[in-house]
Image (cartoon, rainbow, N blue to C red; front, side, top):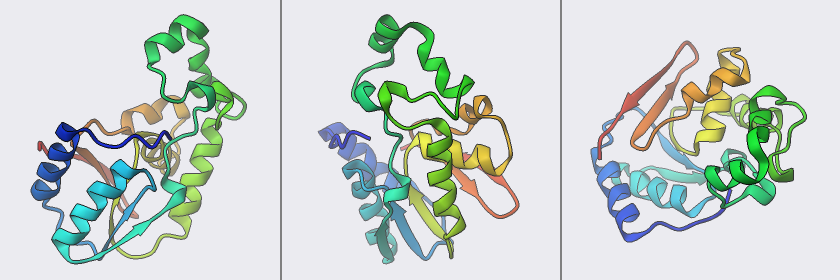
Length: 167
């Protein structure tokens, strides 16, 4: 959820990715409020000549006091407590932040009110939670739907597939 900007290399990567994306059928771009998502979303929207909408429900997960820390330091300080995100999705709050179920409910709230065909620039947490929830998978399986850098998830009313766009 930290609103870190993009480095010079990150900005270059975003520009390459925006130029490489060949998804043809969308009428707007929706982005998380994070600067890095808004930047890429803006590039994509300008390239296609469509509107950019900022959607707070697509913000990354709130990790509370864990925010901005790497997994290794969290592991050293907390041990395997981070497994609670998957093993106790309704009650475990990483760093006092948002539970996995709250994250999923937020993403599903957006999905239920979604209309049209859009390209969405969001974060791994909401993407994985939305895809896993729509497929009725348990939270432990949602990690498989978290895209890697340069990868996207295509969600339609009938299917969920991943695609790779090497910038």
